[in-house]
Length: 265
Image (cartoon, rainbow, N blue to C red):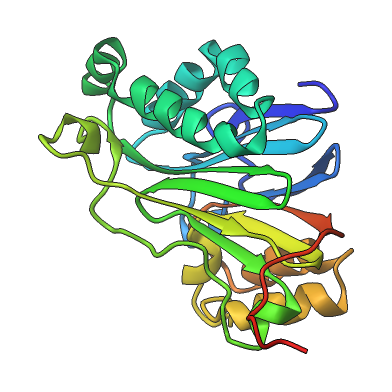
């Protein structure tokens, strides 16, 4: 790990009964492996973070059964880190289409799919890249991404993607289907401060907490952004969450003009 990148899978450091918060450049990463008193014994999450001069590339994974599938995806991406970074050095008009083509090729690669057939379990994963004033993402499964900004909050727009419960990469693999299933999108950020947050589902499924409603998280970061990440993890720990939670979050400030309706004053 350097100051501008992180690669981690939960079988390396489980963080059971332990909250861990780090900063990688301007990106904050929070990890909590779940509570042993609730029966947790392992962590099958993972994340990958690479930072450039005008872009961020993140991958957040939530595996089940074992962490082998998450490790396989992280290894496949890491082997091709230079190619991925080169796509994000392209002008923004080409960067995301190049990135999508490259990642889909890596996920459909026959050698990689053969590796996936030998692992125990499957993983959900969400790739998210920011360049300039745009976000791009590709989602397989139920990892969640959010964008918090006052312009969007006024319209109750918080989520970037919807959870899909029967998509995975691993022993059971969406990219082995005749028609692979995944979702993808591109969004223009808003003028001012944009908060991006990606999380595994331990955060939103913890009983007795309000985080299934994204407005709660948006309000928390608006009021106390420096401590909001710790508050999220400390809250689920107090509620004896069993599932592991991994959160990646950062802000992007946009000063240039953004899209507004033609009749806006």
